[in-house]
Image (cartoon, rainbow, N blue to C red):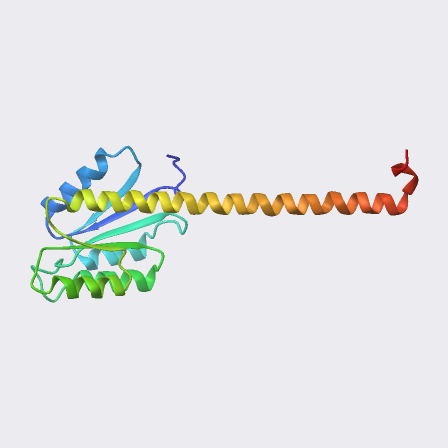
Amino acid sequence: MSTNNEELIYIYIVDVDEYQQKKLRSKFTEANTEYILRPYSSGEKFMDNLLLNPPPKKALSIVIVDYNINQNNKQAMNGMNVLYKTKEQHPEFNVIVISESSDNFESIKTEALNAGATAFFKKNDNVYLRVRNIIKGMISKNYLSKKKKVSHNAIIAFIIVLFGVSTLFFLLFKLFPKLFYF
């Protein structure tokens, strides 16, 4: 992948559990794609750093946040707060919420998806595979979107050139009609 900062993939891992952070980071490090991984142990640290060091506008930015990020400090932001603030400040970001299973898992999942989360997964043995697969899908979608834009621009350029050449021939025909008779 190119080293152009606008083509890199920024992955922010917001999880108080260092073991989970390391596990996620290792999964992305194993991949053959260049990711810029930025781990945070709280929603506040993530939001503060994002304000000071935002990624390039055209970069693909993905936030993986634990719903229970505030489990050690109930006054801190939880995963939903991070989701809301992220989407408010950066609507183009993709946010994946992960959570330990709970009694109200489905209602939390519905709330997260309605708030703009790209996906919501239970933390289990498959979560890393599921997160990686959805990120691969985001990368493909982002790549195809860029290719579509390039193709669209090429078609517009072709039409402009075709119009210009047609206009030139029309003017030549009107000004010098004898050039076109053999």
